Amino acid sequence: MFTYDKYQKRFIKIRNDLKLNPQHRAHDWRMQFITMAKKYGIDEYAIKYMVGHSITDITKRVYTNREIDWLKIEIEKIK
Image (spheres, rainbow, N blue to C red):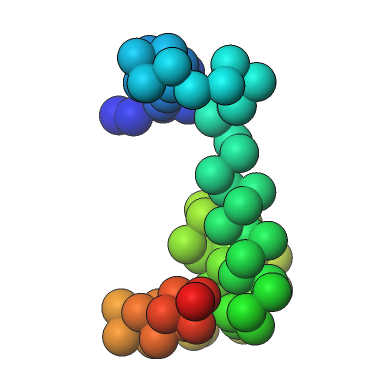
């Protein structure tokens, strides 16, 4: 399993190896992606699904198929 701790350690190693700003954090990419997704009108539930956030609406969570083609269409809205 790829835990957040493992992800964070790998992120820090790569950040340091590339001599990037040490203020960058492992969650920065999520914030940037979600900000851009909202800017370009990506479906709210597609965003949550792609970043692994919980969907509390039972209809959307249980009874909605999230097919790859639909997710691809949504993510390609980002220019």
